Length: 310
Image (cartoon, rainbow, N blue to C red; front, side):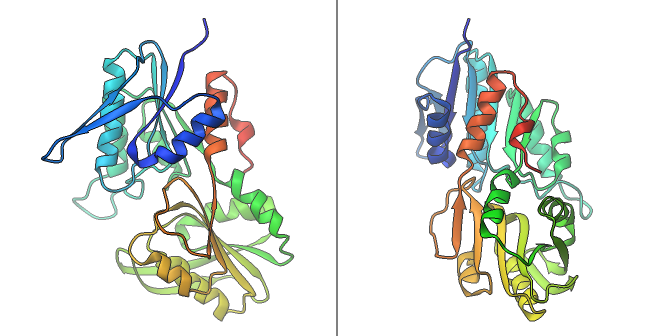
């Protein structure tokens, strides 16, 4: 008997979910949400999911209602006798809280993993987690995709003869090294010191960028303070051009203004998070085809490793 595959979406990811469903070859499932006057809400599937493999697409961006909505949709699917429930999370929120950096703080990424499991999820699909070890927080399979599959062809299309890959901080050195090794380029690292969250006190460059075309690689761009400062440091040290590629365009606060005024030639992001306002320096590469192909491979019980470049 053929498997019944249904793809639904939370409100935070309606556009990308529509495109994923279309590329997979099905229509996005029908669901509705009732909102009460006190702010409480109730999601509902408006078609049967009994015995079906249910894929729920939802990025858990702020506000936290987006996470709660995903959890409630998983619970609703479980109680409606879905066969398998797969959370497709283009952006996994709270991923930066993957360890205790100081006493008496939560490990929120682990808490989110526990909540998803408790709600009834059978599998999680996401892309470019802030730290690879977050996969180990789950007791269910995690399909962890990499945006390098999309970014590397774009970098190659630029045909930069003096390419240097850079990490904007020490934590991203592994990611930068992976790109540099595949592209056969040099790699440099920025060392930054923070006095408070989202506030950089100082930044130093480790490596040589004189006469080089630099591409900064990171998993996300939030306030854009780090990228703007890193671009300044690169130019001050003789770089020809500076670009950035970041999977998740959080772009909070005055991030777009910082990017516009910065030495960055362009910032390339994906559409894991809907972009409300776009500026000329921002370029978007969609992850819709990558997720649709991964869902198809999962349904057909095929390996997904062919989707990875590095």
